[in-house]
Structure formats: structure tokens, C-alpha cells
Image (cartoon, rainbow, N blue to C red):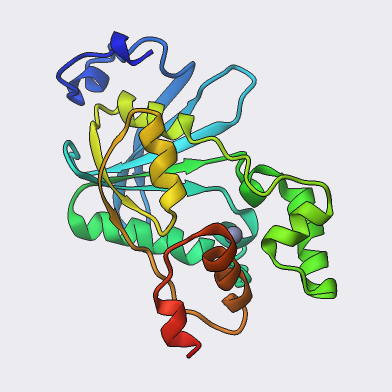
Length: 223
Ligand SMILES: [Zn+2]
């Protein structure tokens, strides 16, 4: 698919309105002022019946771009739930991108509960609270997969934006591998560590011990 893309990888492809063909089914773009800073918002979907996603572009990112690929978490991102660190990571990532002067946040919808959906995720919360299962076992106990997220949409919108290499804001080595498999050059991984507290410690511990996330600050928080 990527052979069809312009070789120079410049954002001018997008600005000219002559976007790379075949990457995204539908796109709309606007200016978006947020409390974190001002972004160029790119709403898109890959298929007419697929989920709508959004990329927030700050500055004029081109090479080794600071990028956060954020999986939707309604409870954490919107309601500020503290059982996970998603909301804090979203906010920190936007702040980091603005502080850097350029970067992209790709917000992927359809990724609730690592892809199982909001209702199923809520069912896993019951098992976590009442049976003491962790985020992995509570999913498998319900016959659900642990992680079915696909990061192809993120890779394709980065290509659409003309971004060829990124420094990824993430603690998850698997996310680096997933984006690499879609042809995105990852030149570095930038940790996105949020404070550990009584509400999120079990979730963070499971992320480290069961899912391989790199969370060195967890040891310091719980000696
Ligand atoms: Zn979350």
C-alpha cells in the first residue's frame, strides 16, 4: 500500500489537498484550540462504516516527531477515572507535544478495554473489584481477548500527515512493534509515566507484570 505514497514525505501533500490516495476513506480538518494549546485537528475514518478517529497536530512536525498514539478510554479520558492512568497520559502527552513545539497525538476510537468495548470493559471492572482479578485475568475469565487493538489507522494517518519517523510517547514496547510492522520508523520511545497511587497501582502492576510495559517508577513507589 505504501508504495503509492509520495517519496518526499512532506506535509505539503496534505496541505495541497492532494492527499495520498487509498490511505483514509474520509477526512476533515480544522483548527482546534484546547486548554493544552492550539492544534490542527484531522478527523478521519478508514472505512465508511468504521470508527472515526482524530489526529491533533501541533506545530510543523516532520522528522523524529514526538507522537502519542492514544487508545480511547472513555472512563479515564472523559470522566477522569483513576483505576487506570489513561486520562493523565492523554493530558501529559498533549502538554509534552506543545512543550516540544511540534508533534502529533493520534486518538484511536474503538480501542476501549484494549479493543473489547465499553460494556465488556465494565464487566471486567466488576471482576477486578469483586473477585480481585487483574486486567488480564478479568478479560480471559469472560472469554474475551486480552488485546485486539489494531494500530493500522494510526500508521496510516501519520503517513497521510507526511510523517516518516517518530519518537513514540509510550511505555508499551508492543506498541512500538505494532507501529513498526505498519511501516512507521520509530527512532525512540519516550516514557509517559504517571504518578502511582492507591487507585491505579493494581492496574499499573498488571501492565508491567502481565503485559510487559516498562514502568520503572512502580518499583520506587512500592519498594
Ligand atoms: Zn483507561
